[in-house]
Amino acid sequence: VGHPRFRVPSYFPGGTLLELGCGPGHELARLRAQGWKVAAVEQSAERCARVREALGADVRCGDAAELPFPNASFDVVFARHSFEHMARPRRGLQEARRVLKPKGRLVLEVPDWESRKAKTAQANWEHLDVPRHLVHYTQTTLGKMLRAEGFEPEVTLIALRSVSRGSLLNRMGVQASRLATHLSILLAPALGLGDSIYIEARRGDRGEAGAR
Image (cartoon, rainbow, N blue to C red; front, side, top):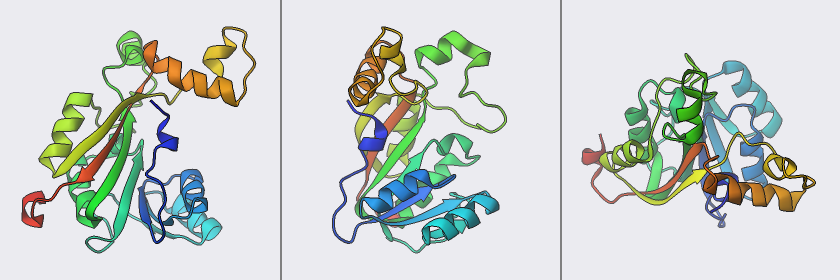
């Protein structure tokens, strides 16, 4: 088990990566620093311009349901907490598959509708976030959607998003540190505190006609 930010496939020379919904660009900058040739799509025109200027990267304003990139352009499509914002998530998966190279990978993280936090907080669950979050997922529904759109899920984790750095061990009197952070990441899902679904899925081999 690991935190999703550590599980983007390892960079290889010439590797290309597209982020769907880059926000302020922190993840995009981190991934570029690893060596990836990065691009992104972002709906906010202000953020799009800001990240493009700051990173000098190919950041385009637009919707993940209509990606402005040619077929088979990327080795990885990275979508961290963006699919819950999409009015047409299946179309977003179709587009992600279209721009991925054969055997390319989709790295996807969304809030977990079946998490203990969601069930306990109910209408007060932080990830409900109406009206910004339009669709919510369980492991089962997300897996079915991915397979229906030509992906083969290979890694599925219950991940940790909203527990802050070292907070779980801080409650037990342990000083926040890198060790505390990693132990929190490992312990929180086992204790029912994980609140996100993380999936790595490989682009399937079926013909392009079957993906549309």
